[in-house]
Amino acid sequence: MFDRRRWETDSRYYETVVTRDLLDDCILVKIWGGKFNRLGGSRTIAVGENSVERLLARIERERARKGYVMVGRWQQA
Image (cartoon, rainbow, N blue to C red; front, side, top):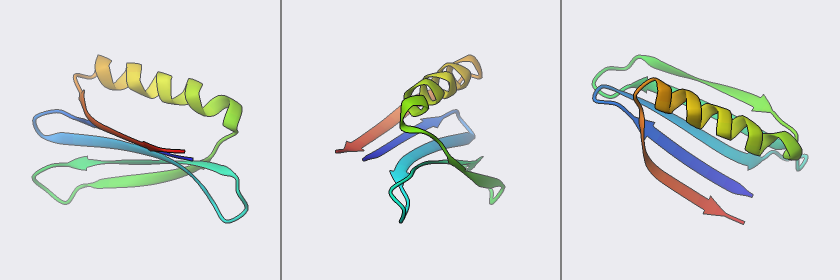
């Protein structure tokens, strides 16, 4: 399982990556920052397979509310 999504505004970006760790647990990595500076960060969260879609839907709504536009989505089974 691999799912990567990217949202952008004129000056900021936000990415999510859903993948599996070495123990085959589902993890979500959130990455954010500025397009024209080195400011940003990331956070890795262990999530259950049942809740990952709900969490991604919430992130999509939040990004849209803050003016971000989805610019890419990559998936692999």
